[in-house]
Length: 125
Image 1 (spheres, rainbow, N blue to C red):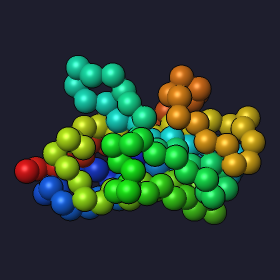
Image 2: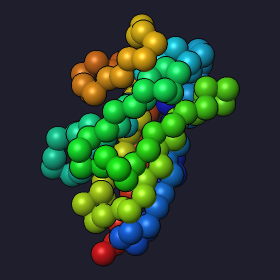
Image 3: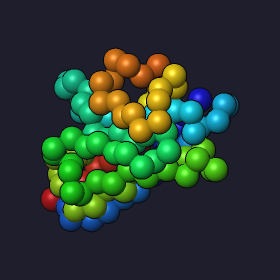
Image 4: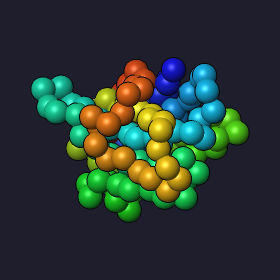
């Protein structure tokens, strides 16, 4: 099971750190992705991190502002969000997928089988 947390209200230009905590099998076996979905819009890719944490990939809209990291010993993945913009306001979800290879990342939401509940981020202007 996955649980995302860390959302909240922040002013534009501020920062938040989201966390995705996993229970169950070794988290180090899973590629993790972050996605977001605004009301009435399709869910979109934000970031992904490989099993070992050495490889990451980001959407162009967040590149240079968001950083994904992981602590497999604590079964946790983080998404550090800096320089937040009002357009970043939405609900963020984490997802995890096993049966992957080291160094692999996954940007396609349809390839994830495990999803957590979202955490809401609100950025005020």
